Image 1 (cartoon, protein in one colour):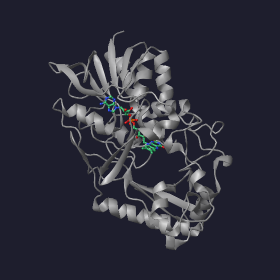
Image 2: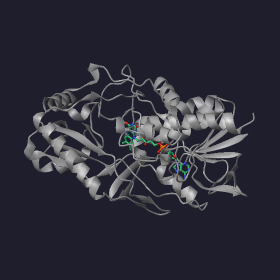
Image 3: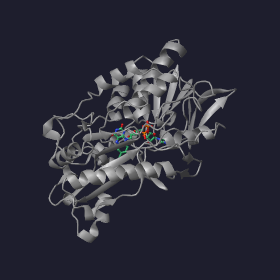
Length: 401
Ligand SMILES: Cc1cc2nc3c(=O)[nH]c(=O)nc-3n(C[C@H](O)[C@H](O)[C@H](O)COP(=O)(O)OP(=O)(O)OC[C@H]3O[C@@H](n4cnc5c(N)ncnc54)[C@H](O)[C@@H]3O)c2cc1C
């Protein structure tokens, strides 16, 4: 039994590790190279689509640039669809050592925001993280790639997968799947064919549907991105840009608000000669409508009227909290709308079944594409849990080793 996995991000590295440690022969193919995590910011791919969408193409995929946020998402919806993830979530949280950070890792800007939000009557929680506080020296650079290797990335699972025998092929773009009589037979790059008994696509929510489309599968619809803006203003000398980002959480059903610095704010505040260290900001992230679309050559994602309403409600709250925290309200500005969690483009119940299999026998998907709805919150734990569940399904139900 030979399985090819395409993509080494949250989904692909996990499924490779879980399969190979159970004795399956796995070849994992990624279009990106192996890099040092601190260089991940050089591998961003952005899509200017209305809402700007971000991901990274290198071994480890977009997990290299996360902020280490670790929350369960979509668990109830998935359970209703017959996808029970409780045991997998527990396994992931144990392996990634998910916990809130100690007080030593909360900087003055974050504390000001937390106190201000509490004064205004908001419930404020600490954000659970997969960051090791022993290794982390707060620098505000999680989204660039961690220079201390303090944050979990899927490279950790990838290294383990290699120890269990996974063969890793880097710098190789998979362009299509090879099929015969309704069954998968392998994948193709520009130069080479990789034959397999089963294939797992984990190329992320933009590239996976494109590969599926070539097989005539109606993928690429219902794209969501968890749209966000960062609102901020001047608070001289706060040095918030050097703090761990998104370390606290204010949540209601469709919107989360969390301390966040963006370099874009400096540009927006240039009339005040703002320095990075003088800016305090908050991210407003919404559960956006799945109104976008991936096509073979484009990505389309605009805000709907409901998205705009949620973003503006959240921004008003963020503005009030920042003012209470000491920001000069005359300086408040916002970034454009962006999205760091593309998903939904090969959704369960639409393109794949509850075992993540497409209509082509032996062709599975394990990445953010399979989400049935926008999580409105960090998706990595859920992607990893889904990938673990898939590996167990393949080993227990589909393979006779
Ligand atoms: C700045 C930022 C911060 C974030 N912070 C958090 C956070 O704190 N917590 C959280 O839960 N989530 C966070 N996210 C989101 C999270 O990183 C992604 O949702 C998650 O990594 C997606 O996993 P995936 O497996 O779907 O795809 P990816 O992790 O993007 O992996 C896809 C892989 O496929 C490869 N690939 C693509 N096309 C091909 C092809 N044709 N052939 C071969 N290989 C291919 C890519 O190189 C890549 O390695 C953040 C995202 C960003 C951008």
